[in-house]
Image 1: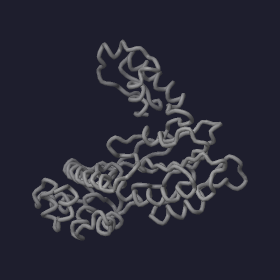
Image 2: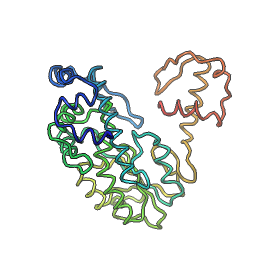
Image 3: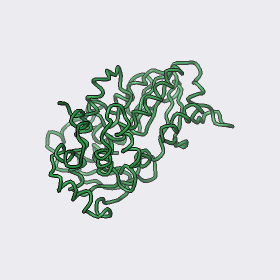
Image 4: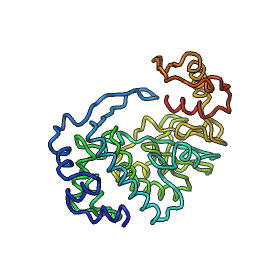
Length: 325
């Protein structure tokens, strides 16, 4: 029996515990005996574009449990994709064989590229949404007790914590409802759609960008906001657009999707290349480099790596450092 079939046949905490490789008492202890305030360590990290991101890192016992749940749900998601026979992927974040590269590739060589960002993506997915999805979704239709336990494993303070191993897969499962609506809207507007986590991208070769997706901001020539139809469809599935992070780029200017240039071929920004090159040089000279003025000490590097030429062909090193920005 496949993973989804086994999960659907599960009807109690005890059966779910066994499916996840736990004794029922051990699972109950993690969920109900560890005080809520002791389950996570909270801290913030800086965002690339300013501001901070709040991270909730689970303690080791809970983290291991969440990893096993994530593995199970990922298997279920793969099985659903196979049986549904999807022709192309709509979401590219947190998935095997998917990345910012596969996402950006969907929008190469287009006349217009429009990007939007969802506000508080993980926190907007609360306990009730996770539980309700697992009960009502046609692919899952889980027992209510089992759906409740899974939501208890996954959620903290009534939200999906950013830092939990199972938050990405659950956000993709629930986000698929959004993807279906966005794909249908994009099809009507003759656009291509894709999503990477909370980043949504629409592109088209139409002469004028469709107003149902984006419109010019009142009083501005080069600033765009989401169209009424787009905003309505996103809000229907419980998400909100961050209007401060919308942008529409014409082919005569630099077009970006998930941080990559997509005008004619996939490429990194020149600024990132120069910064990565500088970081590589510092790394090879002193085994340390700087990010945002902060010194980062690197592990010992082999002599062969130190002797590598810094050139555009050395993409593996450049991309490794670039992703760490």
